[in-house]
Image (cartoon, rainbow over all chains, first blue to last red):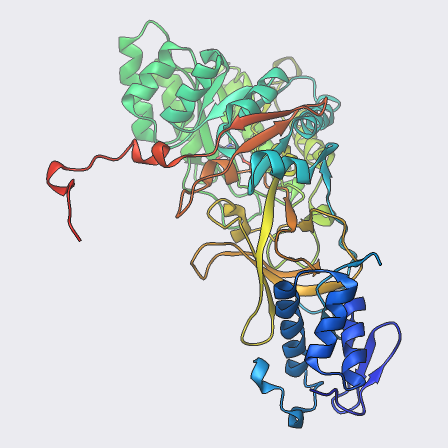
Length: 88
Length: 452
Ligand SMILES: Cc1ncc(COP(=O)(O)O)c(C=O)c1O
């Protein structure tokens, strides 16, 4: 799973997609995940890191994470060729 | 290392320019306390969902309304509209404040009597008063507001059977410039029917005509409509003076003042558009004072205000059951309170706030109730901070009509508590149990057994 290459991301969680002209805002954890995705981390790596740092159980985290990622897909911010469909 | 608190990750699309159906982004502040009592403690002790009424707000609203009218008109009397909220605790607060009872059915009439309201302080409205209801009301010297000629004839008959001369007013419907005109109730002003009814009452001499009544609608955003209604009733009173030398003791302009709720589809919020008590009072008092009624005969002004006194004293607390994403990508938040207990969600765009501290980040969502039905939408377009399962929400301004029109459906109706002015919480209606409902059922003998 990979973020589309030319997506602009600010430190405050502002996202701009030059492909569509759409802009978005992320909350802090959303931003953290998107940054990790941009660094080509795998879902497992990201989930492990979050689990370590946040007060949350694994089942809930999985649920929220994949829900979030499918929202990214819905907004077409994910490179569709990277084969992440197994999560949908 | 201490772990950080988790918030669900979210991404929201930003739209430039015109506000969408979710409106402009506003900061949604949490409602963590109601009259200093914690929302968490309330649901912890009494369960969720839970209706909460603030006695302090009830009394404040009442004294505001009373002050608005009493500073403009010499003789004012409120009568609490039972149908708006007839929980005994609520009625008693208003009775303690001096309000009479305004009822529209035999059931409500009996409820007021059982609560200790004297018959002479009960106004009996409505199109469906049975002969027995009327008989009781005549014997108790209640104020009977006649809705149609059939009722007038029944009362005339009853007058012969009772020691008391029935005390009556007629309900008048009229054009006040607000449409549609509620012409189903009472006698029409413009076509002369109301004047005709008054003449018949005066000529027959069997009934004691004590007042004139109108209720021009509910959630009326126009204060001037009340000015017109009061003028027309005053004109009838002036004609009675002139033709019969009869003084109608009171003019009752009914209820219908808007609360601060926002109607669905309205662009501006109700707290910006609804007139205050002062504006309604100004319009009504001016109309009476400027009427042709002789100064010595100025009638008592009766108000049957319901919604505007109780709506913002009521809260519904609920809990998030789940978050979902609908097939088109929209967010959905499912809470444990459905439209069956929040009837007013069909016409109000209720204010919903989180019940605990939240982050700045918001998302657009639709809030659904737990019923297995498509219509179960509590709020179509909500901009909410990120909520997760188990979080509490507080729905505001739900005190009017919900606790009288709520339906039992697939689950049991919840508890209702009242917070007194000292901050003590009182259970004023218990939740239903399976037994509450099954005790009303009868199972025929041949259906008592089955084998699967
Ligand atoms: C006769 C009468 N009086 C008073 C009321 C109370 O109206 P509201 O709650 O709009 O003030 C109603 C409600 O419909 C009514 O029918």
